[in-house]
Length: 113
Length: 117
Image 1 (cartoon, rainbow over the protein chains, first blue to last red):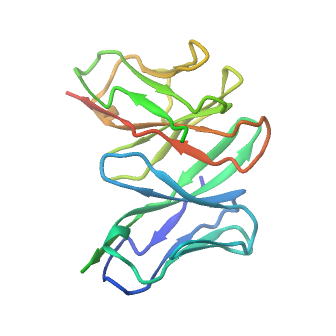
Image 2 (cartoon, rainbow over the protein chains, first blue to last red; image 1 turned 90 degrees about the horizontal axis):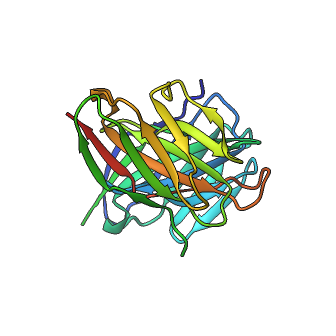
């Protein structure tokens, strides 16, 4: 059974601060996807990383895939209240039948004015 | 922008009743999935479907569950005899327009909230 642990579980910060969310596993994944989920809605894809060591930037968000493809991080620079939400990492294992995702436990971020 | 759509958004049912949740995946995608999320818990894989058959299923997906692609657009999840513990958000997802590997990015619908009384 593959497990993905996210830390921290909860994070409350002030506007303008930087933060990093970690996603760790003992398993190797074909890809690592980061989602954001609002209450009562489905996960919305933010980014996919597929190569060990890969770094992707999405405005103030920086995503990194570990060299061994077992872990990932999400760094937010100068957080804003609009960044508030639940961030999920999901490790993918590709097979001929598709991409089976194992989701992390989630990080609930709250950015206050 | 193409999206995955799900109906109903919320269904309340009595224990033991049959429920069918419907999904319209992104039109040129080939792989389809159901996930569920019990309130306060993480998103869990149920089943993946490709080429008109189940390609993988989790231990949650027992004989009470079935999936079907009855026509070229819909993808359904049926729960034959619902239990209290089936109460959850059920998410449909689809991925890639190319058979084979690709990046496998999954795009999720808004979810169907199932409440079993």
